[in-house]
Length: 284
Ligand SMILES: [Zn+2]
Image (cartoon, rainbow, N blue to C red; front, side):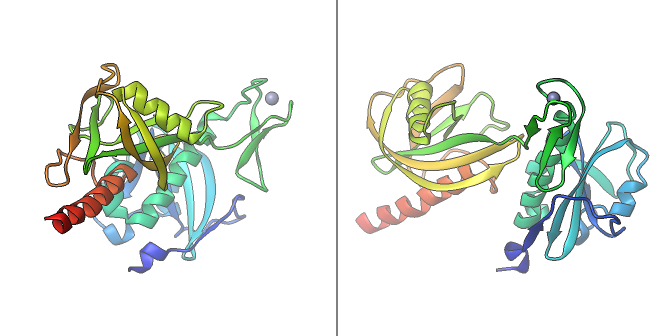
């Protein structure tokens, strides 16, 4: 494994008195990340380079050090001019370009910048908030309300039946692919209840044997994806046309177009392929 996959990140909450000019900066414009497209080994702009941009920079945060490299994040207004080798790109498309550890840190930075912008003012009394130094939080000096970066838990589930996986094409998908089912957890709901409800609502079937797989932060804008596998129990596939365009059962050797590498959905489908292709071979 490369060093990048084992990066050590030391998180910090206060901006140092002096930020090194060479510190790397995750600079976001409306959710898009500024990268140096000509230099994958030095893919992020430095503090000095970002400070020289002619746009309005707001919400500077110091994130900490990754393998000793100081890292900050900031938001910049639309219309800012950037040097020729730089461009703003959707973070989803940068998984391979940045490498997994830098991509994950960029996701953290994106959520911190969004939170900073969205919580400038107190949600209870409307007055300006200020940063707390001991944790990533903002406090209203007037009424004392404390606001943390928002995290929205969402379940994602791969339902298996007779060696086939249930995949659906959602109306809100960003591409013409099929994926496992997903949905946000509602207040007072357990993860298992959410999995059962979402599957019932979206495709009309009942499931059993729900088992945890992995989780992944998904900063678009602030989801925590909690992934499960489950077994089909009963019912006919009946799609909810508001959410789903099409759904079906797919064997490992007959999969439709699936999500790109980087998402936990892809990891689940790859896991299914690896387990059930092997079983096919053994039973042959
Ligand atoms: Zn307040």
